[in-house]
Image 1: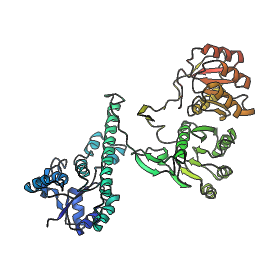
Image 2: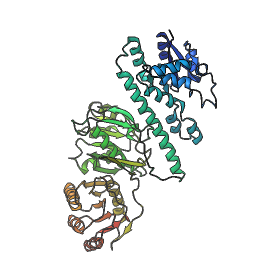
Image 3: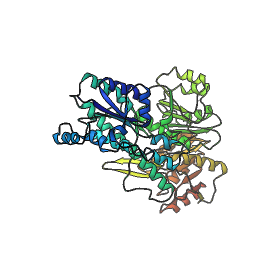
Image 4: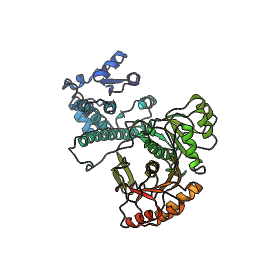
Length: 520
């Protein structure tokens, strides 16, 4: 009786020798190539070269070695198709029953900071995807393995002769097509990026392919009745949540990740400033943001900005959390704290609250944000440039210019309002927010909410609006509250009404020359 055959050729050689030995013990003849063949032979596996099967040498520096009918017909022949089996027998081709291949390390190659385009191209696998796709297509007859984590499952099933249940084969087949789709998407996106950087193609191609790797299942989604999972980009971007180290606490929830991402993005706006920034986010909106000379000062000011809303919030600071700050943070319930580092005494204090999630991430480093923003809608996908712009220019449009201190506070408030849901208003004073009005259906209500939050701290504050004022009602309300300066995009048909109202109240106002920050 002819031996069963297994074809093994892998870039990631984790566990491959033990897998091949297990197959050999079950009576399989092992076919292999190049470095895999050498490793198997050195490990005591009697593997034979693919060249012996094809009768054709590897050529073109290894670019061609497995693409041959002796391999692919052996994989694709349907065992219950008499004509298929007659043909391969006439051609002297034996069936291949197990295919274990993982692909050239394209991801690892393009992750290198100094990778050359030619090197990336040479790490595009051709024969590997072809072979595993063939095996996945013929899943009824062939076990196909593209992930070393599945070696043991296949061996167990073969040893226990439970192949009458096709569920494993079907899962392995589906995994292959997901794997090759992701692999090709990574290649496509890399090549598209090279073309964009060279200015030789349009930014938005006719079709787009997006690939992410599963990081974890979530306990639930936005609400307990929704299931969810977290997927990360194939190449982890420094300074993003996917790169954070968790010291302690429960797994991050769906809402934790969503809120933390908003907080990290806002904190990164202060990366180039001297001093320490602290950002508190609740339900994807900032509820307290402050800038201070040290971490304790920044956190204390952010806390005082809204001591009610901070309960259950996400806190991000861009400096080391020390013992004093940790003690103050531990006085209330927080969901997540994110900082570049923690002192040992601080970590000891946090250990007394084991459910508190403590993440280490340097938000001062890495990219400011993703290059592209995707929003899923029913039946489609909206794609846009990520909002990585803060300002282009400003123009004073009132008789009174803002003072140097007012200008400093206006720019501070403008950074915060960029991350506030529209319609959004931010009031700031002394390098801290004093009132935030997020996500309202009209701008005057957003302002009234911000003033309500500010209370007796509103007098002397400055205001930032994410978009223009359609009427002068916001200016008049601001004047009554004691707000002294305003930053807004301008561009409304009735801008002059707002300008005149500012002049009448001696409020300084600057336009951002059309740059607005809608956030939906």
